[in-house]
Image 1: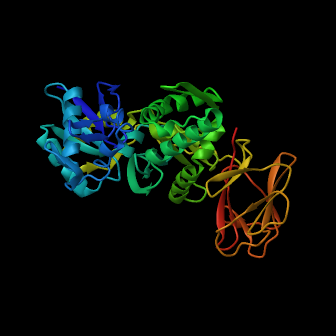
Image 2: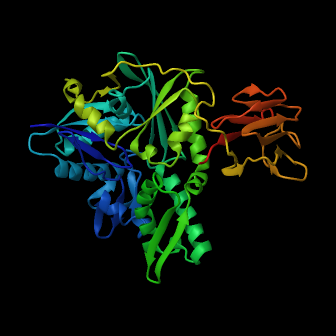
Length: 448
């Protein structure tokens, strides 16, 4: 008999047993006349037959009926049961017990439904633990840890605090910044680049669209060591390839990165050093770790796949309780928290290269860039559709002797990280520039 820990996120169920982590099983189902296909097999068909694909049964775990009902699955809970029972059969051995590591977005009614599903599948559950707590309790980290994960349909930030015990304090989410949205932006990037280069659009054919999504993780992995990366797809008409740079992938999802940065800022206290723990799905996003470092007084840790499952496995003995359905939201820290030496602003040497507005990035150079509602002729960025309090020619961004500065010309003020600019101010990557009152917020980013 052994303990098994299952990390339960809609982006992929992962099991840990005797220190080994299974391949993830995505929370995707295909509901067609042939029956229910689920997990990896369903993910491999989801772009071929999108009308039959369904992927909201874990993120919205209820007994509500499915849009397409079949004899073996009439509700979302039925799909969760099918995936979990099959996953358990594949991963467990006779006599095994399980600990579930569940995301902080799972509410008590959903947790109760999960417990019922486990009983129906005859899975012996010894405990439930918060996923972020399980993943981070063993980290060599600051007293405050911010765990960032990407589910299929939302990004989730869990604030953890404590010296001897790491406790979940709160959970925040960005509902439109999940893996699905990020992957769709990158698929569009590849499609548009191929159309320009070859006149072939992979999104107009189901087989090449599926191939694009299947190969996307490998392309992102190669970006860590190679820039640019060659993107190649195979179709009936032959092979089509295009070369894409890291900065193109980053720009394509800039709007989502800004939302992730806002999640982190909302959980921080001014001047507080924190450890940002990126779940494997977040850690795989190009340059996201660097963006987190630019927020200042920050240690960034990329977690391995299945980190929460491994953490739950390590704590399995302590999680077993008489009330097996109680959720544990605090665990002993295995290493004492530490406070990193505060670093001066800009110590990473990263100066901003671009300013982002409305999801688009604009280069900052020695040629001044004037921002406002209706900037004068020359190099300019019109803040169309922005809030009141923005002047026609509000401020200027310019690089001088390697230093990027904002020059304020306005009546309503320009603000860097909430502090009003007195004439001019130096900018660093990760700064937030608010133009006007109430105005509009722009992000300063650095792209290698």
